[in-house]
Length: 114
Image (cartoon, rainbow, N blue to C red; front, side, top):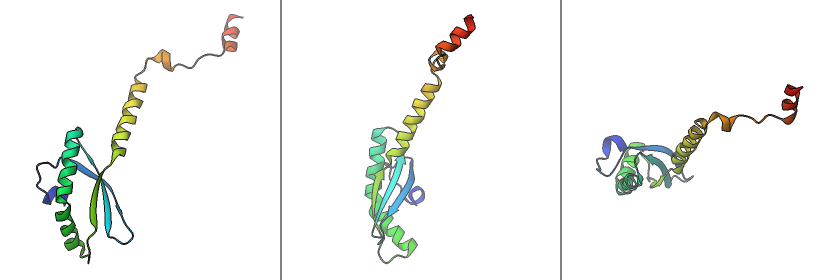
């Protein structure tokens, strides 16, 4: 629905990562991630908020609900955190070999001399 029906120029490339719906189906928290820098992320968030009433109506019509849930959009920080962890792991993988070698115990050194 977002890709086909929303034509807001502020809406960047977003991915819906998960949706949490209240037990009474009155509220839905929609988590999303967006490509780009902080400004692009902010613009996408504002565009989603502007379109929330349109999307709520569309959901009500398509799902045939008596009352459509109120949509709250939340940027999903977990994707950015995963990217950061992956970047750190790659940096550790590119560390010099001397720094990653296991130290030898003193008894191993003594055995070589004798």
